[in-house]
Amino acid sequence: MLNTTEHDFLVLEQATFDEFGSTGIVMQTDFAQVNLAAVLFGVAEEHVEVTPELRVPKVSERALITVPPFMITGHIHLMPGRDLRQALDELMGRFLPVTDAIYWSDRVGEARTTAVIVAVNHNRAQILAPHREIDPWAGLDRASSGSTPSDASTEGSPDDSDANAAPRPPDPAWPDVDRPADG
Image (cartoon, rainbow, N blue to C red; front, side, top):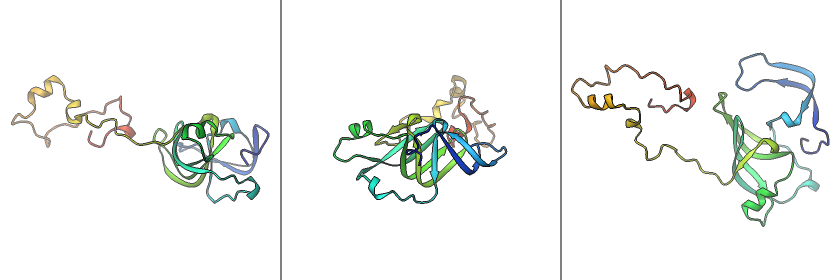
């Protein structure tokens, strides 16, 4: 439906609007005109059958899609017989289907949610395929990263005790969501 409309707006019936990350009021309406360019993604909670005449054989590729402030992982579907770069270059459509999807936003506090299919606004998305998660802190000594020269002179002294140490104030450069569990 999102790719078949020729208009830039879609009229929905019996719509509910809930701003992600908000604890404010949820709005319900009989009709809503939605600007498709403003939509980040749509979520289907049930399997959507594809019309057989529209079905084109494709290859499934695991991907990470960013639609700030959201992240989505799942399978994108690419034309077969092409290398990944060419297949990504040939992706078409206003909205791209992502199947077996998980979406979340650490920035706005939205927990990971699974969906059968998520339709991502292609004009607002960055697609990473294949992707791999890395630890940006790998190889760094985290224990010494917060020490200062004055700390170094007292480390290991007989009076140094974790039980008596006052907790460190939070570092304003680290939002709570991104702060490592150990400090």
